[in-house]
Length: 231
Image (cartoon, rainbow, N blue to C red; front, side, top):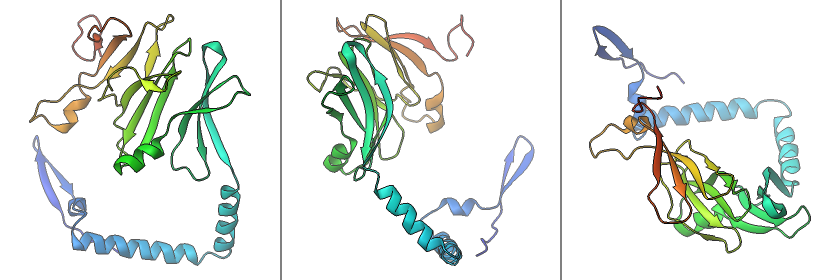
């Protein structure tokens, strides 16, 4: 199926820029939906006509379903604790677990599938980082496939979060101080009401959070505004 050409011309600084398929940005358009269905039907028929494909796909699914679980992102912490993410055959997302030593009983810490059942939106773990002594684990969750990470910090022994979630942590990570008294993380700016959506990626700031004392998080470096560091 051939997509119709409907040129739209914009003028940027004296240059004409032609956008041939801008109308396809309207996914609710009946014309766009009809074209997409025709493409899907064409692709389906082409793939189904490949000799032996159905038999091969069935075998791949059989092998894939035979895997009981997959484990990745294994990390060690103090006290012999082992943190890891695992996804069972019936799980939609990786879940965060901990165990005492390699042979200890595993304990579930973060279950994105349970969160999805609670609010109807899919959740995923973006990253986790245990403190050096293993008392805390920082982890980031995103919802609805957004990758808009929100950082949480959990007390590993109780399974309870110990501070308010930190949002706007897209592209962030957590780095603990050697004594686990605090950690660094990155956060995007809060946009003014009428600011362009793309401005949220400007002036990202690295912060330090101290675990005790209740002090406000300290901005360490802000991209584009620090005179001593050109970013």
